[in-house]
Amino acid sequence: MGTTDPGEELKELDQTLRSIETVLDLDSMRRALDDLNEQAAAPDLWDDQERAQKVTSKLSYVQGDLNRVEGLRRRLDDLSVLFELAADEADEATRLEAEQELAAMRKAIGELEVRTLLSGEYDSREALVTIRAEAGGVDAADFAEMLMRMYLRWAERHGYPTEVYDTSYAEEAGLKSATFAVQVPYAYGTLSVEQGTHRLVRISPFDNQGRRQTSFAGVEVVPVVEQSDHIDIPDDEIRVDVYRSSGPGGQGVNTTDSAVRLTHLPTGIVVSCQNERSQLQNRASAMTVLQAKLLARQHEEQQAKMDALKGDSAGSWGNQMRSYVLHPYQMVKDLRTGYETGNTAGVLDGDIDEFIEAGIRWRKQAEKVA
Image (spheres, one colour):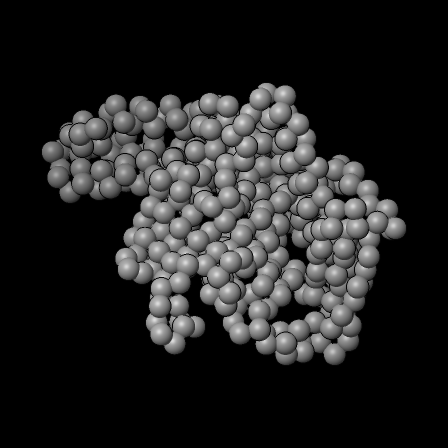
């Protein structure tokens, strides 16, 4: 589209935004906002702190979503006027300003359009993310810690609250595993495209001969359970172990046996939590994680049955999904979508929105083909 005739692109952006407004159902969002405001104003709201935090978090998210859409509509209307003004007065400076705003609008509406693609059964849920070091020894443990920081920085950039439930430190450096929650609506739908095996290629800082090392870390993303999910876990199916919380290198950070490890005997799923001071709180948090993993397992089993009925031999969209190359060149590339960037430092500092958006679009397209 040539910049001298932006009318057609403005029409396309208007149509896209109208489609987004229809899918998001702004009237429904406003009704939800009124209801959440009413709940937030209740005098006994903070009698139940967990519920209060969920209400205020959801209120903030819905308000932000609504403001975002309404703000884009105002900007698009103003942009049409700005182009008309530039043409009427033959003002080069105003035309350049309008073109810059058009580019910004194109990006902002594209990002919002991705949000409308999150229509899966659990996409609107909060997310539980588990990162594990895989092949590669100490480099893999270090890479797992790099990935955890990347996701926490991504959440911080967006103002999304997070809570770290468990970190299991490796002996020399990095993490054996870690589990944390991203506590915002649609976190699961957004981050679920990050699931799979991530690969790092670099000169190992732990190799005294300075050799290149390839290491791997796995990312698992599951939706947080809600009361309607009915995940019942009989007491006799769980083994509970308590132990003392520890920090990097085995350093004790808690003088009581408050950390909790739950083992689900029928499936072998093991979860731990050591972020709270009390054993009771840690057990409750660990049970939340266990229920989420069992829900995800149940969903995967149902999906596998559906795929078998459809004769789907393609299976999941993959294990090894992204490569981070720091030597001999700088490149992060998604192996499913083909999206890549040379800004490795930015990516590892949480600048992963383009990868996530490409992944969501790719997944939607793959669903259509299937």
